[in-house]
Length: 200
Image: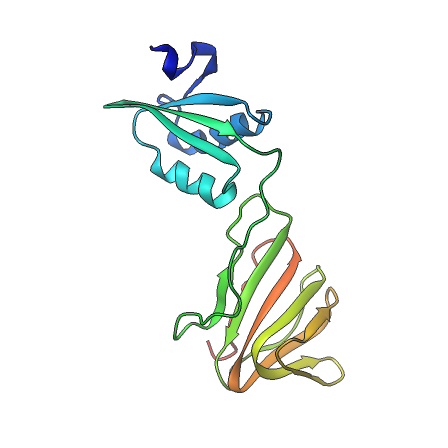
């Protein structure tokens, strides 16, 4: 192996590692690096899906440099550029979403996180039936449209800009008015919370 490809102690060879174990092993090695440190990844193919995962989880915080692309022998130097993942824009909430979308139209795509966030879209006249909420507090930010929050003792009007607090386990439901309703939810990460329009 050439010096440019890295010293043997510098190489993480995953070519013989079972595929389900490769990405966790690579990310664990990357997280063990100090800022400016690197290692050479050796694989039996171009790890394009791994690079997509790095770009999703750590955009701007790593350097990906191909050293070799021989058949069956791909080598990439991965360098850590920052001590933590970098702050970044995930989505624009003021732009239109795909036509015909209802329910959870967007979810936070980052795997290593403490928060969950979703953009919920309710078509005109649709809603989410009254239910007991999860065991986490939830913030709701109304993005556009209008509707009603149904509570245990009454209704709360929802308009763009409203920031609503839903205490854990409180009874709540949503009903969209003629313009439909779109809102962002944020809460501590928990098991998947599946919200569907009442008419679904």
